Image 1 (cartoon, helix red, strand yellow):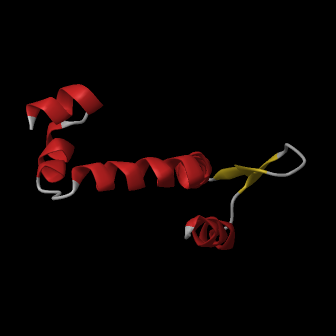
Image 2 (image 1 turned 180 degrees about the vertical axis):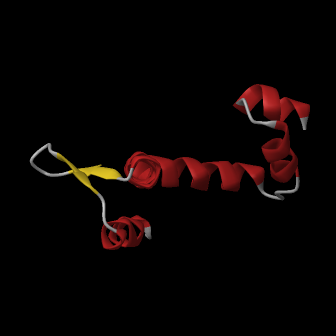
Length: 82
């Protein structure tokens, strides 16, 4: 488990989960493929949702900050689902 933590800079609990994966090379390959295909966009969507929840505001397409409504948060979650 220690080699995963060092090599991939994984937290101890994640390395422990990874230790139980049987086909590690396939798992890592699929994870990298997913991240390159969807990761950045997904992280941006999550950050948008986090900002909406934390601050109660959202950035409009015209770069204005407005109070967020419950439906807008629901829509942001719906957009996140792949």
